[in-house]
Length: 138
Image 1 (cartoon, helix red, strand yellow):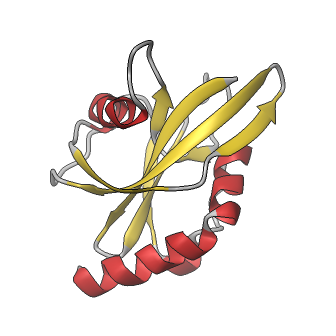
Image 2: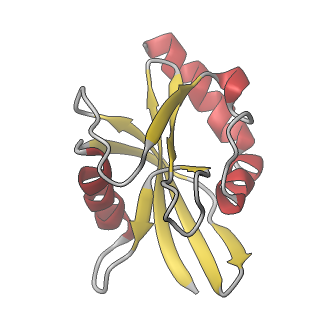
């Protein structure tokens, strides 16, 4: 099983989705940013490193969500999701070709990768709560 961390990043009442490029394992699909845990690295260290590498920002971890196990062809992934807030203003895409800041009613619109769609389904209540809370504080 491959442990992978991802960040569900909220800002001003919206949630970030990023789009993979055409030459990736899941071409042009949408996902939450993140990546594989390196040897000796905690999930919290992994997600902070990955977000810095992929988006050029620092994040603040708010909560850890339910893990998702998903069997892709040829690999079993354990997706470890974190609700996060961004601490820096501007994002810089280094590994993705697009981004969207989704409003609550748009959460199901992107063509999500399967594990990310399952993450949304299994954690829907927590995500909807976070949308409301973030919108009130934004």
